[in-house]
Every structure is written in C-alpha cells, then in structure tokens.
Image (cartoon, one colour):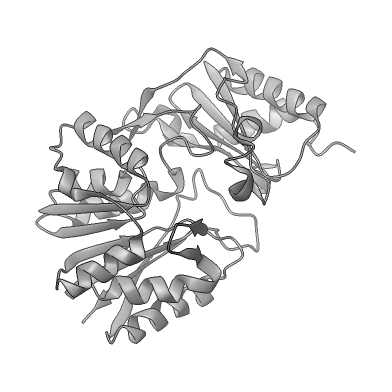
Length: 328
C-alpha cells in the first residue's frame, strides 16, 4: 500500500492555501509549506525559500513513491527547484558516509539553486539547498527570532549552537549591544558572518567562536563573563571531540552550564525540538539545571512555532519547545 495519500496534488494545494497571509508577505519568503500529518502527508515536510522547495522524508519511500511526490510538488506549487532530503532516524550517524544518498547536491526537479537569499521578517539569509541536510535556516524558530529582535535593544546576547547565526542576526537587527555566536563548526559560523554582512551588520571575528559549547561556557563562567540573554538551541543529538549530547538526557546539564553566564535579571531562552520530550518534562529539566547552577529562576514565557505553517495534529504537542526563564 502506498505511503502517500490519494489525490496528492489536491492535498498539497490545500496545504499551501492554509498558509494564508504568508503567501503574500514580501518580508517573509521562507516558511513551511507542508508539515507532515497535520497537512495530510505523514512524515513528509516541505519548506519553501522564495521559489525553491526543500522536501524532507522522515520515512522510507520507494523510488516510485518519491517520483510521485516530487511530481505532485511541481504540479501543486510550480517552484523553480525542488530539493530532496532523506531523514531516516539514523541520518545523524549516516550523514557523513551516505551524504550523497541522504542529501543529494543536485535539484531533484527544476534548475540548480546553489546560493540565494530568502527573507524572514525583513532580514535576508543565504540559503544553500544542496549543502547537506540543513540548508541555512530552521524555519520553526521564526517567531522566536522575531521575539529576540524585539527584546534585544541595548542588551548583550550569547547565541549557543549558533549554526548560521539566525539569532545573532535578529538580535543585532534589534539593537543588541553585543552578540557572541558559539558553534562547533567554523564553516557554519562563516556562513553566519555572510548573513550578518548581507544585512548590513558589522562582523568582528572575536564574536564568532568555533568550539565545543560546554567547554566555552565553562571558560566564560571562569572569566566572570555574563550576558543579558543566553539562547540555547542545541541539536537533539550531537557529538564533538569532547562531548556527546542528547537533549532527552542532557538538557539539565546544558541549562546548568548556560545559567552560570546569565546576568542577574537576565534571561535564558531554552529551546528543544525533540518531539518525544514532553513540554512539562522539558521545562522541569531546564529549571533543574538552573537550580543546580545555584540560581533562582522562573519561566516568564513560552514561545514556539507559528501555528500557521507549523500546525500540530489534534491531541499532540508541538515538537518545538521554547521556555524563557528569568534568573535572579
């Protein structure tokens, strides 16, 4: 039996129509076009960046089913290009050895789109759809980045697991006094520097630091440095030379380390996109870590993805959880 629903083109057109105001918002050209079961196609997502669509598969489809899905995407959405990402559960292990299979560099349909700019809330970001499983911007964080931009004026911000520095760009655009971006990968930080320059922002290489986040948090705490806002947006699983991290197991440890560099009265923005971690359990882990750091904290806000393009199936919690904790 096919894993795809009947009348697939109609299903995809209906999903697009549900995005409403996003379809005509010139300030935001990057959003989720299809969000799995909530839009009628379980374990398949599609993100649009301008006129380029990136389709992600979270289950195995046959070659014929992949062809059907890609052809339906072209018929329903008429994009310039469609790129395909295969994301089995073991993708994080296979990413280096089977990259060509999981994330082909070439477009699956249409013309190549190697590097172009998409907009989010008026800010520009370089998108590179052929460069692996992650193409430059995690779209479920759009509203959280907008919140940070609205809060950042005059503040110091630490952006952990910065990737291409979306939070850093948003904070700087909001008038932050300083943003320090930390990530294990120098390559993505250089991508982040390009994003900053794209938006007319100055770049100080001292504020783009490559290394293990836990090691750097320890160094910063030892030096007595603190920040008004610390954003922690880790991958659900990661490995560096010195650390293995699993959000379900280790988020309390991360919250502990991050809380030690939050200024008195400052805020920790704790983010997690692990679907299997319940909201209440996640919040408890964050507060447990804050307490372990010897700090008193209270949750002052919960953020998350826009329901417009990240709908959640009835009876389920959103995968993305964002808790803002104010520390004394």
